[in-house]
Image 1 (cartoon, rainbow, N blue to C red):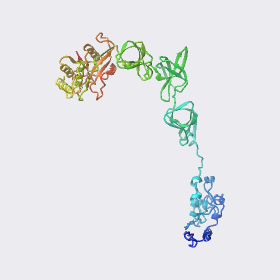
Image 2: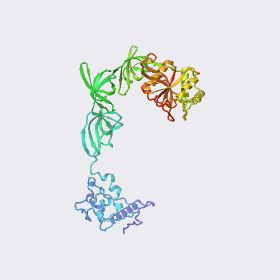
Image 3: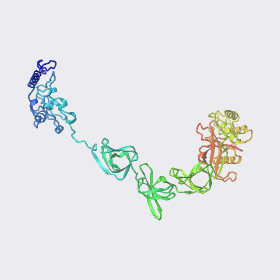
Image 4: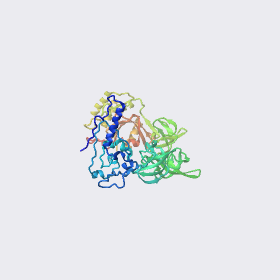
Length: 569
């Protein structure tokens, strides 16, 4: 049963009356005297060392001697709990719960491993009835932040260093990064680094499973995670003879930051033995060449090279407006512009590291490089004048009516674009099909007959099949050269209709049968779908993926499995 100490009403200080100062002072002194007489003397008279410092005689188990409190944990020795050397400030009315005089239990008497003992156990022996709330104010007796320092000092490297390995040379950041003052992401930041920042490195250290690299940028040094860095790769065998396509440099290492050993001119032939990848995954080759009778070796940008030049010849035609470059490099200086139809004398060709073929040509008295696909054979014919309408189909299945309208516009110099004309062609074509079909489109026979009918007999077309792509293309070119009229092409296995409006060849088809078709120009009726603009040029190789064998899925037809054209003449 806890005792209660109740102050007499005559001793309770009050400030509501106008008593004299001496009377109020006497009351306060009487209150203090009554309070101290009711408490054990040892709670206030003990010296700080005697009251708070554990003695060597403290029993590890059972009840400790009454003269010594339980021993605190060893970590408290660094900063002892402050002694209660001053009287607590009394309050107006107090209810003090005493700890009692019974024998302390084992739980209260045995020291524990808790680094911060309670304020009651530290300040007052358990065997003495000590007011808990008054004698040991928690806020002042045991400051939480300072009373329990860590047993092990905090490591500046955020853990135990496992291993350290030397690094040399440079590394580059692969993303936005930070350079820290210590091997710890929680330490101060020396500087921030943007992508592809070059850093000099000296070593790497494994800390808590993370590799940290000692690095510096200029005069600023620090630490960065290895995962944030990229490096030049180890050499890989690469035996090749290459052609330098532009002015370049041989360097000491496979990086743009390495010192330059020597300049290299365009069209220099070099021999490589290996390559490395730099921090941007660009390839550098270990190249050798002879200059001024001396063999030079170093690292050369692979993207500055090409295959060895192959000799070509013949006057070829540029089939669209383009640029003549000084080097086989679209990012380099230009020589002049080339207009569609200009003749160019070919000299040699190379293929760069992007797979682009370039041809060295002479235009007039000027030499330069042009992309090879822009050059066509020596002979070129183009039957569309650019003004006659290339019409578009009005429905998804009127590709043949629109092609008929375009071909008559070009061949007869018409300007028809009407819906009614295409509708009439479709109606006539459905009545002149080669076979009865459920599909809504027209077939090659109805295409040819519509051209003949709606031209009033001024042109004569027929549907013709071939067993090979080359034969079909050569025949189409020959008929166009003979008549000056466009040619109908059944593309995508007969599923769509295009019109051939020009071509290029190695020779004039009317003068010799020894010619090769190098490309064709087309006009298409369905730009709203995937068709190209009128006048688009396809090389013969590219066109082979468009002009494919006809196939009618509903039934057998005479066109099935064969290359089919609608030819004039």
